[in-house]
Length: 149
Length: 397
Image (cartoon, rainbow over all chains, first blue to last red; front, side, top):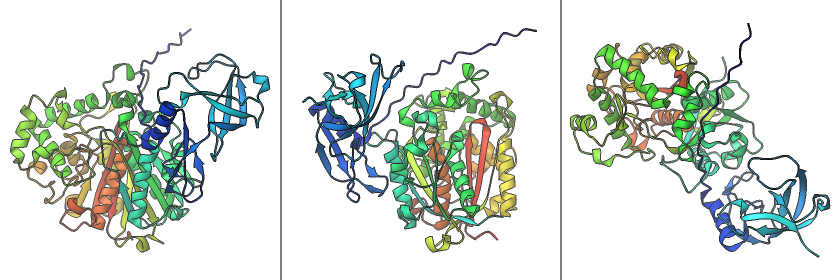
């Protein structure tokens, strides 16, 4: 006997609300209000975190000093994406990069723009381009663009 | 048999409706730092980490890795456990197994939840069968109301009996600085009057008969951490280690429609086996304190019968006779229990930690006066998952 394979469409949508915490909020407020990138530093290993951390995972101590960093950095790695992504709604192709902000110990995952994909290189110098409308999210940096000259 | 294992340290955050000042990782860190301080250890002393929460409450499916900056799990073995309402007790059981195996001496157990970050009922429904029960399920409250209705009908239990349990839990919570609900207005009012108020007040909204607001647990943001240590090191770390005398668990159905509404058979079976393993013959006499996962008031009647503390239908008598109050023969939930704080993934671990504090006599303003040789702990979750642990003052033989 032929049996129709029935399926049931789910209706559950959970409206998540993630609290950033005071440490992350301080970073986002500087982005939103002043177009500034700040990091904070582990007092023991001296690593500088962007985005900031309340504790240093390796040393397991609270982070200390806040440092105002430049809005420039270096492309550590990148890829050019040619498929649609429901979250990052940008015209294709989308360039994703790991940007090591000058003075930071790790890289920030973000977009690279204002450049043809074939021109992007690892080691390229880039500068943050801030969004016109900023709402206190990591996308208050619209993308990173090549440093001219 | 494996190594003997004891709880040697415990830390927790204060329960709150919403911890807006910290993210999940930072909340976890507060509990871990407190537990390490309690055991006078540093993170370097920890051999492995077991962590648990319910993924759907925060929408982070990678918690073991995501949380390392807070948990201290950087470059350590980490094991994630998620079993619904029982998550915290299953985390404790898993930490126990890690140490009992002989492979780790000191294991950090972490439970946490930020219920403020999602819709609790919506998230709970994702734990149920998508085809047969999600389209028509009312979440945890309605499911428990079905159980309460059956119990009331069979044994002639009243709403006042349920309210008496709620009053006990909320009065006990007033002694616990970490409890989420502190109903200060209850102070100084006789128990009978409080019960009357709860069953007659229009402000005490009926959610699903017979369950009013006061019969239910809150949804809480909090984290807890406990340190489990092997017999080779435990006595050096704690003046009175809280030894794991036995632990066991049971579950018996997948669909809500299959639950035995007459008795809580999973809890009954798990408790019976745990008492046997711990050598406990007369639970009411031998157990000094209980920290029970009672998610709603009527569980504090019916399930007490299933644990074997009294005959079927006599739960109300036990509670009205003050047996389970702070100065009774069997104090239940000196912490205020789940009905006073329910950070779901942490809730079971808080039961274990609070019971350990009672044995160590470090429970401060909520310390029971009587000597505690055994403490009885339960965890409860969807599918009537039952976790049970018995902690003891004496090292098991």
